[in-house]
Length: 142
Image 1 (tube, one colour):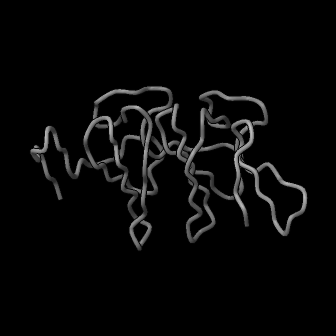
Image 2: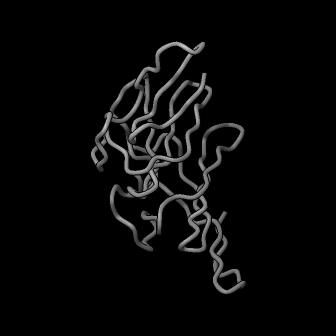
């Protein structure tokens, strides 16, 4: 399976056939659950859920059971800030633990690492793990 972006949606191309739109709306950027604003990273988990890093919507979207309606599992759509349930300047990197119970997000603009439950449906089910400012560790939670 090859994943690619084209005018904000996520397309899939299997065996070099015609691409199929699997997430997003063609030629339509925005912040609704079915739209993206500069999608960048994608991950397919062991349950075949698609996770999309929606950079300028400051969120991580999860698409379950081939739905084209995403659920925000990290961040708040269209809201960049420093609150614990928000990310600053878009999500740069994310990683799943081996059990796929947690997603770790590097919130570069806020100098912190956040951990979210993968079954989150509100974007605010998180924990601050590490926060660094000017080279000094400010908080560590476990």
